Length: 254
Image 1 (cartoon, rainbow, N blue to C red):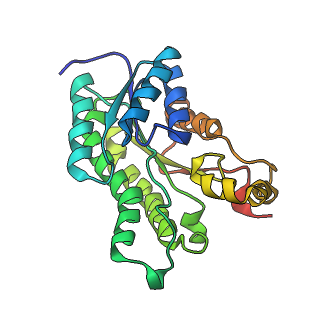
Image 2: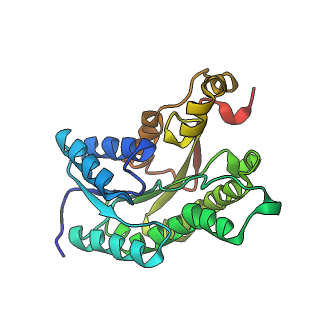
């Protein structure tokens, strides 16, 4: 095990979209960034992109739904640097759509694993190393669907994100005595590949979504990255157990 005075951040699901924007922002904030993904070719490309911007970055390929793989890789990072300062549980997703009547147990378990188990596995593995960090913090991702239960076929996604909201607060309670803060961001409609299908098949519908946002535009990955950067900073040192909506007022409805 080596020790470093440089701060270390882990960002899961960081080979594209919001996760990549977060990795870039934290890298520019001075963190050594460990990014995770499951497409190793994409991971290698992202590392080159990050290094080209002067960011110290490494790629760790593993599936966040697999307990042993998560534990092994988080431990590997923690042992290499002797600490973890920031864990961003960015990986997650809709997983598809299914109404409850037709929902298979396999689909239910996959979506819950992708959005909830991943947070539990990564957080549990990181805690011993976060205890050695400076201003250590965990940042999770929930969603408006965690409050409104999601659209048709997204009910189990909404259920999983409601659970992330609760586990964020539970982790904050559990870890406060160690000075480890735990918060969440709740992105609104962000222009990423998450919406790739509807953007390509129904571009007029995609464009119209901005009408339901108070600020009249879709979010960009950098909008979320800026809030994550704040939550990871000392400016947020008295902030824990909170969820910050990053949606241009979308959650209020208009």
